[in-house]
Image (cartoon, rainbow, N blue to C red; front, side, top):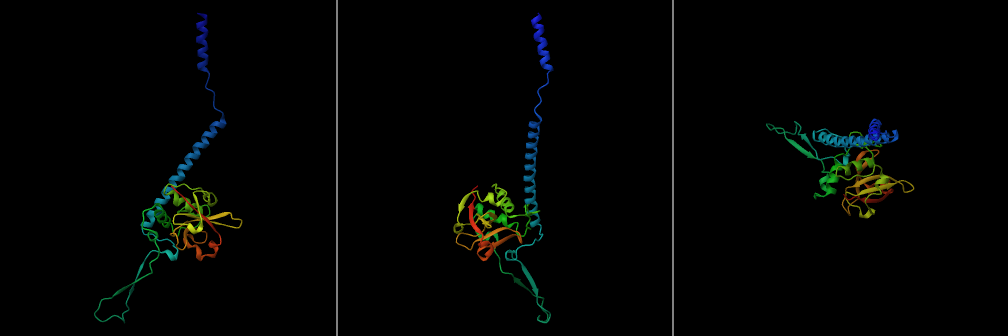
Length: 239
């Protein structure tokens, strides 16, 4: 009877002992991890909203600063003057059409990922440059732009150009094709800039990129002594 009482007393005491609290460092670590995951989720949602909002604003008819060599086709009506118009005739309108300029569809009619990628990149022509920028609403820097465009097709690239230069397969300059990343370096061969190739193989090499002076623009590399002197190599990114 005495032993039974002692056993019951011992069980009661055990039930009254609170569970050992976790060290504060462990709790803080878990909390920090949860906050980090929540922040990443918010950033991903913000990027989706920015992409959707930008495309909707483009469709609504708003105009944006675009490189003059790559404007969409426009027609400007010109009315014949009163002196040149015959009597009893209606005013005539003569349409003067500007020279057709390249559009995303002109770089291939296939429905390949590369063509869609370039079409996506063209959506942001004229967006301003901003160091550290990674959204059309705030502006882009070079690696922020490439990361944003590739992410729209489920490809996650590192945030800076030097790290992006380590992803995918190495491609020499003469073998670059549309959809490839092309990299440039300062003195010492340190990668400092990246763009997306939009030209086909054996064509004059062109890229769409975030220029610090022009924002998102198209550049023919061979016609620029600045870029042609800094070009290094390319990377082909597979999904």
